[in-house]
Image 1 (cartoon, rainbow, N blue to C red):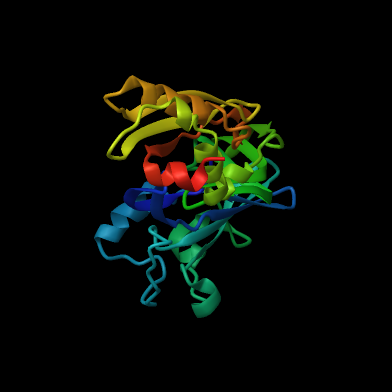
Image 2 (cartoon, rainbow, N blue to C red; image 1 turned 45 degrees about the vertical axis):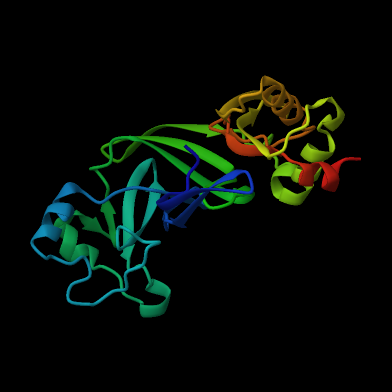
Length: 271
């Protein structure tokens, strides 16, 4: 999974693409060897239990609530000499209200020099940072740095650094009109039977590591196989598509694309 979390609200097909309307969730901040990374880590279970008893991380201070901050806090962490520490818990609107938790009162004797040893973290954790290479609308971001940390009781056991440099966007995924122009201008209209009503074929496709569309499926087919085959042919002819890498591996992202065979499209796009 590429790191950026969202609360999903609605799924629609708009101009051929699956569009997810969602709210980006604010990540935690992790400092590692001077770098600022973005990560999702969690407070120990006792805090979730405490919340049932109306115990507030921020005492009696009233903090804001936003759909972008479902946990109602943002935390800051730091790895020092291969040990993970929690260094701060902040309100979702910290830069406006300056509200932060008192770590000493929450963690008692665990806090030394303002840092709480995060000995409850035993898991592999994926973090991102550095330059943003690609932002895929609504639900995905690819960063230059992608690192997997392996913690046991807060102790850093191992890290894996992944190469995302091959990721790139296509002009066709960025410009819907350019994509529509390519598809409808490259349909072999003269080879298709005449039809009185528009015929819709909905495809679902993805590309390989070279950006070549090589996987096309049907979401909705026509009763006439000629139109189905032509829809697949023209989608596969798209010269370049997005290439996305996640954890060093090609991440196949699927898109829905309707191809509408109509007299209107024939006249508008036929070359």
